[in-house]
Figure 1 (cartoon, rainbow, N blue to C red):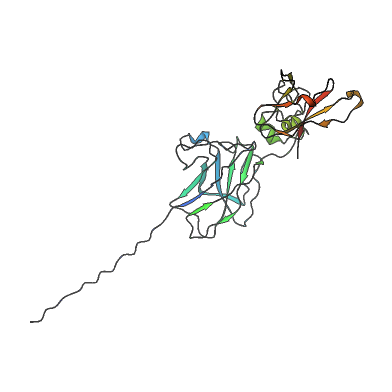
Figure 2 (cartoon, one colour; figure 1 turned 135 degrees about the vertical axis):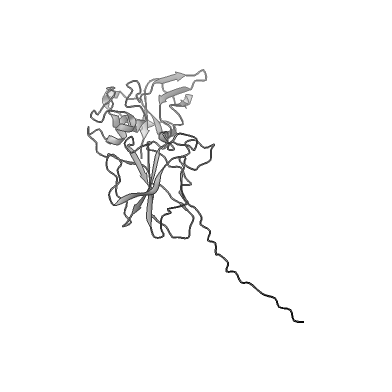
Amino acid sequence: MLGWMAFLFVPMAQAYLSYPMYIGVSQPVQNEFGRNLTGAATMSTDRCDRVELLLTTNGVVYPPALDGTPDPRNVVITGGVSHIGSRTAMGLTNSGLFYFRFAENKPLPGARLFVRAFNAPSRQEASFYSDSAVFTVDGSSSSYDVSMSAMNPLDSEDSDGDGVSNSMEESLGSNPDQTDSDGDGISDDLELRAGTDPTDRESVFVLAIARLNVDGTMTLFWPSAEGKRYQVEFTRDDLHSHPDFMPLGEVVTATGPVTETSIPKDELSASGHYRVRLMEE
């Protein structure tokens, strides 16, 4: 007796896995004052700073218009509008991070893209922006980590000639048509360099307090800006003779709105003049 076994061949359907594409940053994007841009996954998007993903057909990034509108040669792609805090951990606030996620309508291989971030929730509200370097979609990577440039002013003109761009005046809230917005006798540019507020006439860079201590030392106090460097200087000569001042002690780096330093007893003089110099590169 012969037995027969029949085989039925059924063609197997091939399944292709499609992975989402992620584009974002691992380092925080910072504004013109060196602080992380605003936004969080838990915040309303209209309170988070705007982020765009744009296509460049020729590999060149062109500056936007004064109102933030991209150059016609740089086009925001479909799904290319997001915000700081997008797809970040729920516990992060104002981290300066963001991620785009494309599950469908992913940018095609060969597309040359770049990211643009603004220091406000909308183009119209923004005064500064940051661009990433151009990167090319290679068709095999599922994630792209971009690095952003320092902030650039949307309006780099200086209408009042005080050394502060119109964009920075907008960020500070100072008057772009007046060299001394608060009328304290110090130009907006000098106030910005010193770290004082150009919109507050009470905020001035002066050596405000000298205090003699019981141990014979003297402590000097002055208004400062975090990260700025200052040098205390001294002269015994009459100020009318335009004397040379000599450095006293080491350069001090400010860590807050008021900085102090102590002058040792053996470096004090019965008479003389002290000043604080803002140290600039």
